[in-house]
Length: 170
Ligand SMILES: [Zn+2]
Image 1: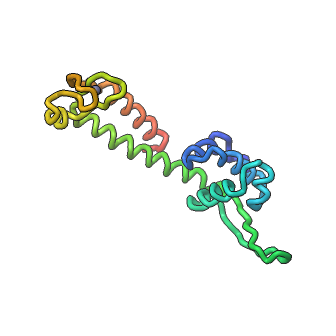
Image 2: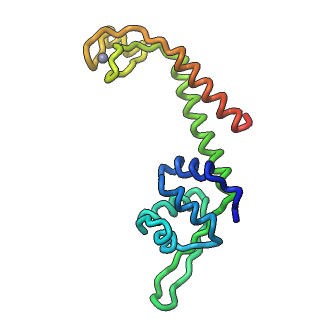
Image 3: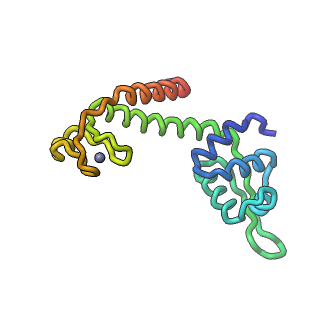
Protein backbone atom coordinates (compact mmCIF):
# COMPACT_ATOMS: atom_id res chain seq x y z
CA UNK A 1 0.00 0.00 0.00
CA UNK A 2 0.93 3.68 -0.35
CA UNK A 3 3.30 2.85 -3.17
CA UNK A 4 3.14 6.51 -4.21
CA UNK A 5 5.47 7.33 -1.34
CA UNK A 6 8.77 6.61 -3.03
CA UNK A 7 12.19 6.42 -1.41
CA UNK A 8 13.31 9.77 -2.80
CA UNK A 9 10.36 11.43 -1.09
CA UNK A 10 11.15 9.67 2.17
CA UNK A 11 14.75 10.74 1.94
CA UNK A 12 13.75 14.36 1.41
CA UNK A 13 11.38 14.30 4.36
CA UNK A 14 14.02 12.76 6.62
CA UNK A 15 16.54 15.31 5.43
CA UNK A 16 14.16 18.20 6.07
CA UNK A 17 13.44 16.89 9.57
CA UNK A 18 17.14 16.45 10.23
CA UNK A 19 16.50 12.88 11.31
CA UNK A 20 18.27 10.08 9.48
CA UNK A 21 16.25 7.42 11.30
CA UNK A 22 13.04 8.99 10.01
CA UNK A 23 13.55 7.05 6.77
CA UNK A 24 13.30 3.68 8.53
CA UNK A 25 10.42 4.92 10.58
CA UNK A 26 8.34 6.20 7.67
CA UNK A 27 9.16 3.00 5.83
CA UNK A 28 7.46 0.99 8.59
CA UNK A 29 4.55 3.43 8.73
CA UNK A 30 3.89 3.32 5.01
CA UNK A 31 3.65 -0.47 5.05
CA UNK A 32 1.22 -0.59 7.97
CA UNK A 33 -2.31 0.67 8.34
CA UNK A 34 -1.58 1.77 11.88
CA UNK A 35 1.25 1.00 14.24
CA UNK A 36 2.48 1.74 17.74
CA UNK A 37 5.78 3.25 18.88
CA UNK A 38 6.70 -0.09 20.48
CA UNK A 39 6.22 -1.94 17.22
CA UNK A 40 8.32 0.58 15.34
CA UNK A 41 11.12 0.37 17.92
CA UNK A 42 11.09 -3.43 17.73
CA UNK A 43 11.08 -3.57 13.95
CA UNK A 44 13.74 -0.91 13.35
CA UNK A 45 15.99 -1.39 16.37
CA UNK A 46 15.79 2.37 17.00
CA UNK A 47 15.52 3.29 20.69
CA UNK A 48 11.95 3.90 21.85
CA UNK A 49 12.78 7.43 22.98
CA UNK A 50 14.18 8.30 19.56
CA UNK A 51 11.18 6.70 17.84
CA UNK A 52 8.84 8.88 19.90
CA UNK A 53 10.90 12.01 19.27
CA UNK A 54 10.75 11.48 15.50
CA UNK A 55 7.05 10.58 15.61
CA UNK A 56 6.25 13.82 17.40
CA UNK A 57 8.26 15.76 14.84
CA UNK A 58 6.28 14.08 12.06
CA UNK A 59 3.10 14.81 13.98
CA UNK A 60 4.04 18.50 14.27
CA UNK A 61 4.09 18.65 10.48
CA UNK A 62 0.82 16.67 10.19
CA UNK A 63 2.70 13.87 8.44
CA UNK A 64 1.26 11.28 10.83
CA UNK A 65 -2.01 11.07 12.71
CA UNK A 66 -2.31 9.86 16.27
CA UNK A 67 -4.98 7.81 18.01
CA UNK A 68 -4.85 7.04 21.71
CA UNK A 69 -6.32 4.00 23.44
CA UNK A 70 -5.93 2.60 26.94
CA UNK A 71 -4.41 -0.80 27.61
CA UNK A 72 -7.17 -2.65 29.53
CA UNK A 73 -4.60 -4.61 31.57
CA UNK A 74 -2.07 -1.97 32.56
CA UNK A 75 -4.28 1.11 32.19
CA UNK A 76 -1.50 2.81 30.24
CA UNK A 77 -2.06 4.75 27.06
CA UNK A 78 -1.18 3.16 23.76
CA UNK A 79 -0.40 5.50 20.86
CA UNK A 80 -1.39 4.38 17.39
CA UNK A 81 0.32 6.19 14.54
CA UNK A 82 -0.73 6.41 10.95
CA UNK A 83 1.07 7.96 8.01
CA UNK A 84 -0.69 10.80 6.17
CA UNK A 85 0.84 10.19 2.73
CA UNK A 86 -1.10 13.01 1.06
CA UNK A 87 0.64 15.46 3.38
CA UNK A 88 4.15 14.43 2.35
CA UNK A 89 4.10 16.20 -1.00
CA UNK A 90 2.83 19.41 0.57
CA UNK A 91 5.48 19.19 3.27
CA UNK A 92 8.27 18.88 0.70
CA UNK A 93 6.83 21.78 -1.29
CA UNK A 94 6.77 24.04 1.74
CA UNK A 95 10.35 23.01 2.58
CA UNK A 96 11.41 23.88 -0.96
CA UNK A 97 9.70 27.25 -0.65
CA UNK A 98 11.61 27.94 2.54
CA UNK A 99 14.91 27.04 0.87
CA UNK A 100 14.00 29.24 -2.10
CA UNK A 101 13.26 32.20 0.18
CA UNK A 102 16.63 31.79 1.91
CA UNK A 103 18.43 31.51 -1.43
CA UNK A 104 16.72 34.65 -2.70
CA UNK A 105 17.76 36.60 0.40
CA UNK A 106 21.32 35.34 0.00
CA UNK A 107 21.36 36.14 -3.71
CA UNK A 108 20.13 39.67 -3.13
CA UNK A 109 22.78 40.15 -0.44
CA UNK A 110 25.52 39.00 -2.82
CA UNK A 111 24.21 41.22 -5.61
CA UNK A 112 23.95 44.37 -3.51
CA UNK A 113 27.26 44.14 -1.65
CA UNK A 114 30.91 44.42 -2.51
CA UNK A 115 33.13 42.04 -0.62
CA UNK A 116 36.70 42.18 0.58
CA UNK A 117 38.78 39.21 1.58
CA UNK A 118 42.28 38.36 2.79
CA UNK A 119 42.27 35.03 0.96
CA UNK A 120 42.83 32.78 3.99
CA UNK A 121 40.52 29.79 4.25
CA UNK A 122 40.02 30.32 7.98
CA UNK A 123 38.96 33.99 7.61
CA UNK A 124 35.70 35.45 6.34
CA UNK A 125 34.84 37.87 3.59
CA UNK A 126 33.56 41.24 4.79
CA UNK A 127 31.30 43.72 3.01
CA UNK A 128 32.80 47.02 1.84
CA UNK A 129 31.48 49.07 4.78
CA UNK A 130 33.17 46.74 7.24
CA UNK A 131 36.39 46.66 5.22
CA UNK A 132 36.53 50.45 5.44
CA UNK A 133 36.19 50.31 9.21
CA UNK A 134 39.00 47.76 9.33
CA UNK A 135 41.13 50.04 7.12
CA UNK A 136 41.27 47.11 4.69
CA UNK A 137 43.09 44.78 7.01
CA UNK A 138 41.66 41.38 8.01
CA UNK A 139 40.48 41.27 11.63
CA UNK A 140 41.42 37.58 11.73
CA UNK A 141 44.98 37.48 10.39
CA UNK A 142 45.93 41.11 9.75
CA UNK A 143 46.63 40.58 6.04
CA UNK A 144 45.39 43.20 3.58
CA UNK A 145 41.81 42.87 2.36
CA UNK A 146 41.38 42.85 -1.39
CA UNK A 147 38.25 43.01 -3.49
CA UNK A 148 36.53 39.64 -3.76
CA UNK A 149 34.85 38.82 -7.05
CA UNK A 150 31.55 37.08 -6.22
CA UNK A 151 30.25 36.78 -9.78
CA UNK A 152 30.62 32.98 -9.85
CA UNK A 153 28.79 32.72 -6.54
CA UNK A 154 25.96 34.88 -7.87
CA UNK A 155 25.70 32.72 -10.99
CA UNK A 156 25.56 29.50 -8.93
CA UNK A 157 22.96 30.93 -6.56
CA UNK A 158 20.93 32.15 -9.51
CA UNK A 159 21.00 28.66 -11.03
CA UNK A 160 19.81 27.07 -7.78
CA UNK A 161 17.00 29.62 -7.51
CA UNK A 162 15.97 28.90 -11.10
CA UNK A 163 15.88 25.12 -10.53
CA UNK A 164 13.76 25.48 -7.41
CA UNK A 165 11.42 27.97 -9.11
CA UNK A 166 10.83 25.52 -11.93
CA UNK A 167 10.23 22.64 -9.50
CA UNK A 168 7.72 24.80 -7.66
CA UNK A 169 6.12 25.88 -10.92
CA UNK A 170 6.76 29.55 -10.23
ZN1 LIG B 1 42.43 36.93 7.28
